[in-house]
Image 1 (cartoon, one colour):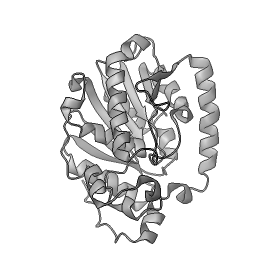
Image 2 (cartoon, one colour):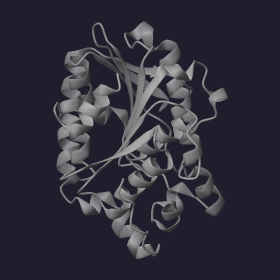
Image 3 (cartoon, rainbow, N blue to C red):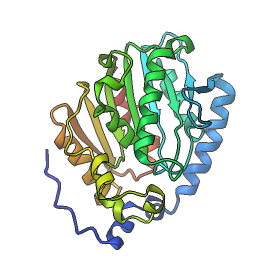
Image 4 (cartoon, one colour):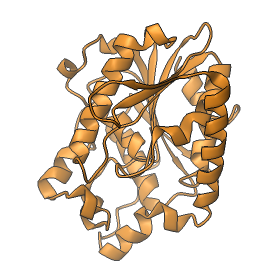
Length: 281
């Protein structure tokens, strides 16, 4: 594996340039509009189980898209910097996975600043517990579960792989793979980011959330992906997590993909991110 270049000094200007993905991809509203439109169509035509509660908060809900005779289930955590977006924008992802014989569970979760990022991680744990314990009754078999997520969801996916085993209320051997893509795993830069007004991180909390110095507690393989068109920091983040958790984890840098087009590649057959994820089953 090619070593990551040394990180540049964390000035506010550098962090804003490297981590403000909407500014880096001025065309991102077109992605959002298409995803919303396609998601509405998928929900209308696929008859999923919507807004199943895994907790008391209105955002602690899961959508399940069952595949007939499914070989397993993908749990997908949406992005939005832990402070925006919703599972409903990503329903469209389910169509290709269900066609491939994989059921899909999409949790929403509480958002900053209402809760801290550590509590968003708690929601990811509880959502995964819910899927493992209840998914089968909704057509999502749970003998083989792959955890996945984009951006903030990529962090949540990796955080599940570093969760104390006692917090899972099922045999974690049922988790057979993880695909965090375009995630944040080193939280020090977040201290210098404008969005920290919502995150409310200090140095101690940032260090507690950082995954690079922690060991994985789940044994399943991970594909840690980023787009070759993403900022140097997002590529560094993915490479460094893969290196820290090797050989269990490996890096996948996807040429030509930015922070938003990489989501499309997760659902497109013959795209490396799609094929690598399918192979985990």
